Structure formats: structure tokens, C-alpha cells
Length: 207
Image (cartoon, rainbow, N blue to C red; front, side, top):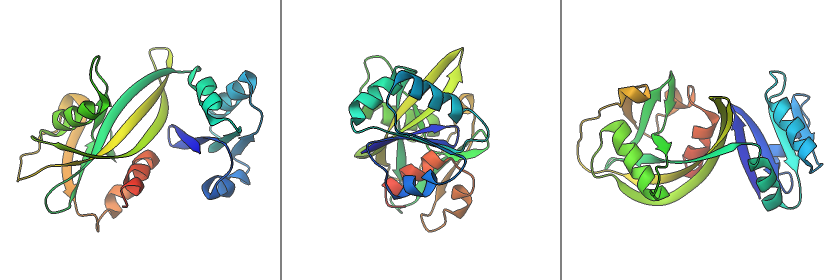
């Protein structure tokens, strides 16, 4: 078992053991590999992940629950939800935000459950109506700094569906400038200009 946390586009793996993806990275000189579980080791790894010369990190420990708990203590945790939307033709919905192709998502509101958040944020950011919740896909993690806080965003992704021909209205206040339906056999443009995290969501859905 492992958790992948993105620092910008750089992956940090919290893992019980190496898998093939981690083994391929472990021998690179720009990867930090630590097998010591201690607060100083976690602090050191987080510091190194912010250095431009480091492109990946791996922290190995046999107890992933304890490792996760210790790592999460270093951040302010924000939960969010989003979705991979398909229409009746099997096309996938993408939004263009901050010069990257992305998927609709947003923060969990107080008193809201995670599934409702995925549907609400998708409808708000795209203008779609009647979005239906499907199966859970993947949970992703990424970090960023905001107002002096180190944030860890944990995003729960779902497969979503929508029926009928609908107008698409990008939520401009969320810096969304374009929305597009894309055939799953023509994802080259999206994949060339998106986040590794979004590629993981697509892979979890079989794309």
C-alpha cells in the first residue's frame, strides 16, 4: 500500500514497500529515498521536495497508517471532491484552468458529504445540470502554501454522468476559461498539458 503526494508536479511516495513505479525512480540521483521513520526524517524529506534539484521522494515504513498520521501532522488538511464526467456519447469533460487542462473539483463545505461535494462542484464549475454520481475512482493528494500555511489537499474523485445536450458555462471566478468534451480516443492534447495527478485520475478510470 502507498500514498502518492504531489509537490507541484513532483511525486512523494509514502509506502510500505517499493512497487515498479517507485523502483524506476529510486535509482535516479534526483530522487530522495528514506527508510527511517521519525519526525526529523519527515521534515527533511518535505524540505528536500521543495528543492528544484529534487524530482521525486520515497519514504518507506512498514506501518502505512502511522506514516500517514505523522506526515499529515505537518500540514493543514483540506478535503475536496471532483469528477470525471462522461456524456451519452462517452466523451469526457475537461476544463481549462490556469493554462492547464483539468477536471472539475472543489473544497468540501461544512456539513456536506464528499459525494454531494463532487456533484455540486462539477455543476457549479461547468454549468451542467442533473449530474449523476457513479463509482469512486481514486483519492489524490497534493500540497501547496496559502496564507502562511502548508496545505495538504485530499481529493476524492468519482465517475459522473450527464444526459442530454447542455450549455457549458465556465465558472470564471474560479479562473476557468474553457470547457470541452473530448473523445477518449483523442486525449493527446489534454495529456500534453495537464497535471500528473489528473493523469492518475484518468488511469484509474481506464483511460
